Image (cartoon, rainbow, N blue to C red; front, side, top):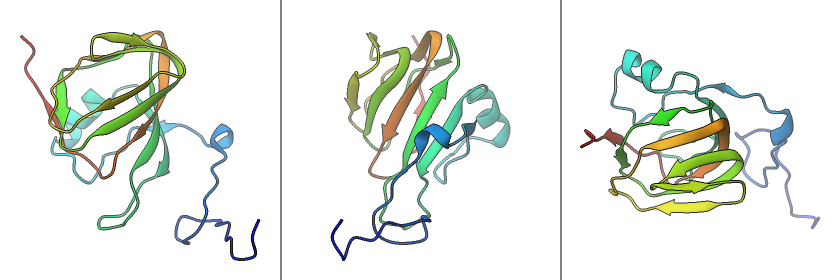
Length: 144
């Protein structure tokens, strides 16, 4: 470590942040500032979904949202699109994304305004790291 390296102990500080992911608890999915659905719709869409927020930036902050998402077995999020691009890395389990099965180590980038889905967890559920440059608005699309 260089003498000017600052290891932070809280997200309020600026510098280097290390995350003890193994000891972070999963929490029920939390509403993002850009969520446009009602509280009831959010609860229905995210039933059983859990998050480990590594970075949940305040509005106007220069940090990207970064979260580990956990879908329960056979969970299905309907066809949709986001106002921001999305990069994911599958950590555990399997999921279907873009019509393709993805397992541990698989990585996917979805451009903003791209309709895709449904995203679906495999029979054992799935955990994946999700990274965006900013919070996104998610728009559900009526499936054909």
